[in-house]
Length: 319
Image (cartoon, rainbow, N blue to C red; front, side, top):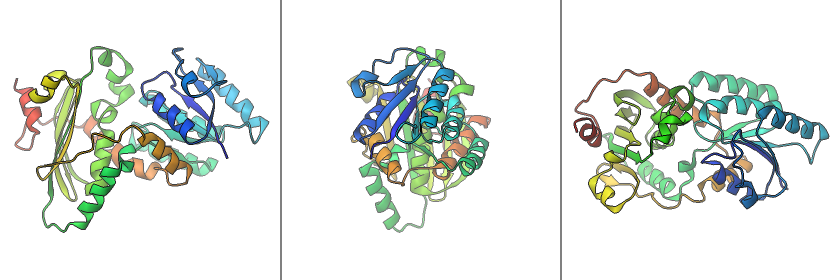
């Protein structure tokens, strides 16, 4: 049976992945909202979607559908709006009797999770998030392999994510710390979630360097020591990557061995939707650890470079 969906932030970068997932899981998008009216992407996936540029009118329409009863009411709200709105839009979903499927980060602050937990209990609906790396076949296989291996020492891990962005990034909401949560939250949270899924909870977190275009530090987990570096500055790309013209470099090494997961990304949102609709989605408890980590990173005072600093961070800072 098809479910009725609504979607917030339909004109944004990540919305097409959610539209594709809603379509491929056999469901129907009945309404969408975005203050920007470049919403032609809707026609690629659905026809007859009610579109709004004002949230108040969208809210009123969803409430009207709810009062019309079964067959009309929205059952799921997909949240693709800017990070700082996720909390409010998740609350809206519960209030209109729907479950929420929220793009990461689910919220910006740990205490927001506590409040949403109370609201879930009050409304009898659930809030799910997109932790798509947890459904990547190669990463599932690697996790099982790591769990099966016996080791008395912690793994040595290097996380690198450099994704070139132009000046628009810092001018947009993504460059505003209060709205995006900063680089660790906006582009790094799913990697931190993945590493904790692999290696357990945080025992030590240090931020060595933090500026608008790059940040890096050191994490010690139950079973791993991690040097991490995140950047949106194309000048931080390794020379061999820059020479190929690639704008992005994504790398995780474990004990010197590269983890290969560059392929297989196109259908991950659809898989997460399938799992969520089957009752196996990633809820507040799964989202909480990575929200804690990136919040701690955001409020930490950088120490400056250390012996445990990521080599590309050291190179970038000392240029």
